[in-house]
Length: 243
Image (cartoon, rainbow, N blue to C red; front, top):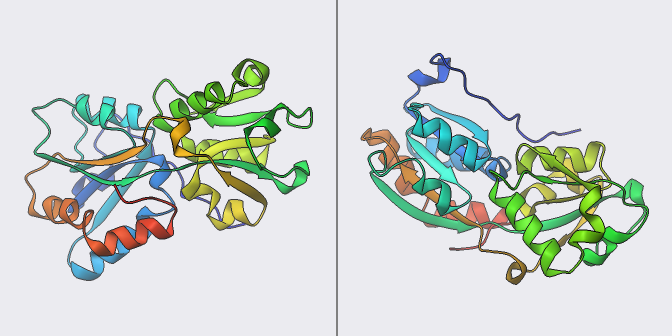
């Protein structure tokens, strides 16, 4: 099975990627799209080496606030971009909007035609990102409340560290997941289940924002690339919307 990218964690010591030309801290929902974005960027800048660490936006923001040496922060919410501290931000830009999806693995035997399916007795575990530090987790809770089923399914909820891990849980052990559309479109999920795109009106906007944290020319080049037409086309293919 083709898997989503592994989530990297930070250590207290400087890791090997600290020597790369551009080091990105990226929200987990970008894990299906970012490899293609980086590859496209490197075709224009073949002399540059780009490193990526994925995680929940809130956790990454805290690492940056404590001094983690990232060059660009890609957050799933402007709230966490603001938490890194004004002294770290050289520039900011909104480059896409994320989408939430309801995903059901084929083994459950149900069609994801709306949120009400989550009240079905066949669905005993619902995976979602931890709303305390993941924007997609907050969005998932918001849609359950908007649909009026939060109390009915509250005991079924399983919280993952981030939305990428929620997607892994949805396909590997849970009976359903509220995940990023970018993950639901990835073969590791799409080949083993079906999804329903949750209407954006049911939750706060999932704005994908970039913060430039470094004066490195390579960092500025990648930051600028994120708002280019080429990057926009890649993001749309992976289930994102224009900002």
